[in-house]
Image (cartoon, rainbow, N blue to C red; front, side):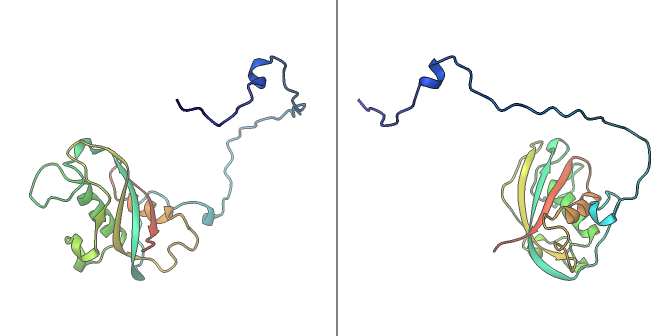
Length: 174
């Protein structure tokens, strides 16, 4: 028979005396809602979801975190045969190409950009966090103002349907 060496004091649970609590300071406040327009610094806002395209500076190995609802798709992995349903990778490749992340000469061949995925899903299966690594054409100061890679992700998202989202695009740590 094993006996635990861990000793717990049961006194706080057995005794029903209330613990002293520091006095709370209640400060009254008001919430005022107005319909005024204000000027916001454009550097603080993420890129809008309207279509955007960046100017490629160099190719770099990146990691994309992707989530999708796979109901209308034939799974994650790209399938080159003609079919009425597309795949998640097909949609992602097209969106990255339109955003400027894949050159014309590399579009259509995922091996040229060293595309690799953390997992695969079948037809109709959803994913919350699939990691995809690839060599992507990136802008000059891709992560200088945005260390979380959300601005690049928003640019790619502007070309994606609503049921596929890129959450972040970050440099790979080799």
